[in-house]
Image (tube, rainbow, N blue to C red; front, side, top):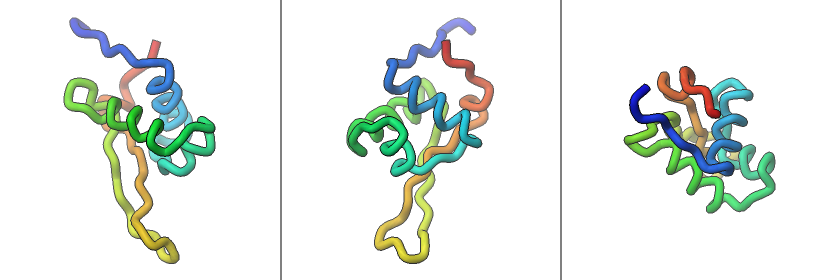
Length: 85
């Protein structure tokens, strides 16, 4: 691979957790796992979702009993193939 994807420690933590847990994890679960704020986790998800990396995508799902959609982080095909160093 000519241009290796570099992840920050925190982005790597989020990516590894999503990958280890079936490739689809809610933002709330990531917040609980990392012990960080939703804003901090969302910044890492945005980093992983950007066009250059393209490792993840967001999926908003309406869940009965929730007032707003639940946001999931899902691995893309590139994310499934990617091995963080």
